[in-house]
Image (cartoon, rainbow, N blue to C red; front, side, top):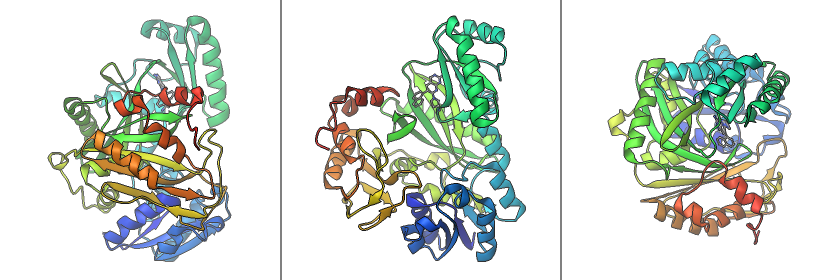
Length: 452
Ligand code: MV4
């Protein structure tokens, strides 16, 4: 087991990882920018190292400074959290070269999944159902038209170096295709320095359902069920739940089994998320994320398993603590992402939190790095906390969530809490009847968040 883990992140996820380390009796080091000297993760860690000025590229993304902080403190492993360097293959490789364990998959696995064409090719080879489309990159208009005619319009053109919604163009007819292909290629070249694009059938009203998987790096793979993350705005998740209101136990076991054996065959190590679009009872792979995700607590709530413990165990060579048959799905969990943003416009609202009071009671978890009197710096992501609610079933979970939202107080800044107070009263949400476009349509109607 590791003696000392360096946490290369900030905010709620730095705290999340700290808690797991403390439970396992592992010493902790955090790195921080000058803007985060007063942050909770700095206060709670055993040691801290200031690694640079506020901009992320000079601090949380500064590989040399982070490696130096490991050498100075004698950390034998790094947990990258999510975002920042968590899916940076070069960072994983550099740590390995310094005999420091990256708590995550190998640089090679990160690299494969970071290239969306390679990821899709790999998924298909491993028996995961993918969206019908081109076999690799498309450059010529003639070829694009032939593929699109084969799968049928509408089609979507995606950047291989994109992901998470960046660099996509929909073509509804053959007339649209030429412009869509050229725009997608030039935008991808400008944004990512790689103009490779691929074509897929465009699914009109899917849900976004993702499978939590784990590999032990030695040929074993398990799945921890799915999360429904369809409620998004501009590719930012807002509300996530486990299980998906759209799936039954048979569908879960089937797609879960496919994902677990794919991860095993790949020799994958650590936590991963296999993202699907789900429409008319069918799953279509879109991407794989090679990190712990923001929304992992809903999976922890329904399985009772600490996924960060599992990451640390696997990275240290101790293997997974569970076999597939030990993983049971109990009840229902919902996560609300509380952002320091205007609930109507989503404009960031940094500043001082004058009062912060979190809900409590059975089935309530709040993961947050902020406190009363804390000043939110303007440099980073606006997530200030996550409310995770668990109930024996979805109805109980929703009742408890409504109550927890009533108790939650965040004064001094604007937050997205009023949006969630509206959503818990909505009939479609109560029925679990939503797709990836539901939230944007709801927000466009503009008659919600009346009492914010
Ligand atoms: C799609 C799609 C429809 N058809 N692919 C957006 C994020 C990126 N991970 C993939 N995305 C999409 N890919 C096909 N073939 C629709 C989206 C999409 C979306 C996906 C998940 C959650 C929210 C979304 C919002 C708009 C578009």
